[in-house]
Length: 97
Image (cartoon, rainbow, N blue to C red; front, side, top):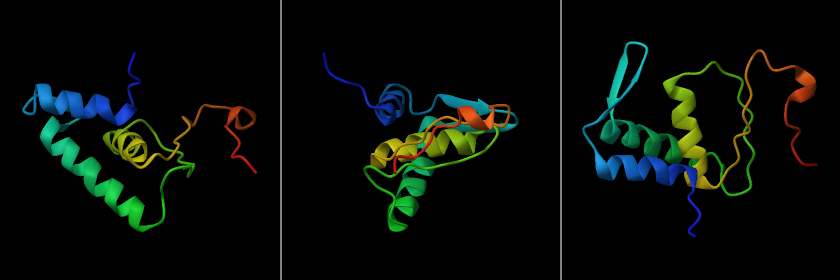
């Protein structure tokens, strides 16, 4: 069985329905628009040295921007451990030393 990488889910959605929409709050993006946003973010992160093995730490509310980062980090092979405001500090993932 082939392993499915997170960003391949987005590529599959883009292939199967590029004009289907992602809706969050008052924002609407087609999969094609969303994929382009993710690619731009991935390119920007790569220019800043983010790549395979990088672990990103982000504290944010759920948003389309966080979802974009989720897919962009996957494209680069970087880790993005889940975290959110209500999560107790002791439960936050610790980066490897």
